[in-house]
Amino acid sequence: MSTTSVKKQLRYMPENDSDSKTVFGFWLYLMTDCIVFASLFATYAVLHNNNFGGPNARELFNMPFVLTETLILLTSSFTCGLAIIAARRQQQSQAMMWFFVTFLLGLAFLSMELTEFHHMVIEGNSWRRSGFLSSYFTLVGTHGLHIAVGLLWMATMMLKVAKTGLTNANLRRLTLLSLFWHFLDLIWIFIFTIVYLMGALGV
Amino acid sequence: MSTKVQKVVVSKPDEGVNLQTYVTGFVASISLTLVAYALVMRHALSKDTIVAAIACLAAIQAIVQLIFFLHVGRETKPRWKLLVFGFMVVVVFIIVVGSIWIMNNLNYRMTPDEMNQYLKSQESL
Image 1 (cartoon, chains in turn brown, cyan):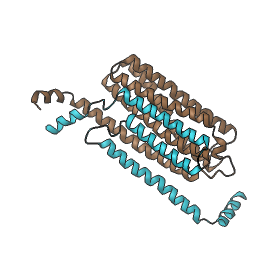
Image 2 (tube, one colour):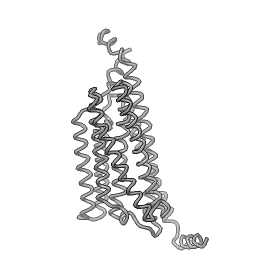
Image 3 (cartoon, chains in turn blue, brown):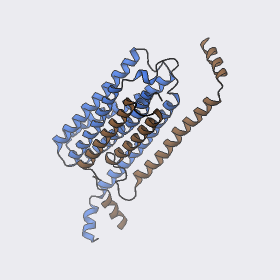
Image 4 (cartoon, chains in turn cyan, purple):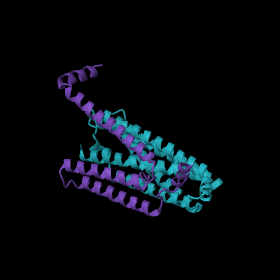
């Protein structure tokens, strides 16, 4: 490699290097968050048959409703990807549009989940009913809390980008946000399979 | 000096981010979700087969999303993200399998009579 090309690349080094370190740091956070969810999954796996005379998973869950929730979250993960592609290409209005779609889909998911929780609680099947329901609400509720935080973050970022544009710092933040959002979708696959599908089977 | 230069080259911001990867990941995820849902709702196979099948489908979908959405393994050589991910999988495995194992064992060792007596004494409180 000639010295001129070395110099040319070195000029961009601090930006890129600190960026990749930030992304790596955020990745470490996501991996530890996985361990939080793993403990909640383990708790659910241990307690899911202890319904203490209350309803079991099979009687409780409305499967078409849950499938709709799942497809909405999956689509929002995809639109988040489209948003980040547009942002990297400096197409600000398109990026904002896709982030807005992602935000709406996320909001739809969260309101569906809260509706589901509300129905359970007014029917007397709250977290106080049984060990199964305590672990269910903790696991799915923690995921919902993450979604709520993600939505808040997304709203803040949309305002920030509208004000200051797609600067390097904003691009880095959007990258972290998209990682977070895809990660939540990944966790939901396991909630959908282990809690809902296996619950419907009566395992 | 030369190692620094290499670092610059590898840390390009858009590692494998393009439309095609997202479309592939999205279509695959939707199909895997619908197949798993159909398997459960149709009840065509025995319960054990369905459980094994949907567990496999979930694992495949997780891998698909890790590669196409979270770009795991797409970084160039010092693959720190992949290494940390591998460590996380080990820890998660120990937590989940260990908990289920220990708690099932405890459950097995607790005789039903003692358990019933305990529950009765609790209800009388």
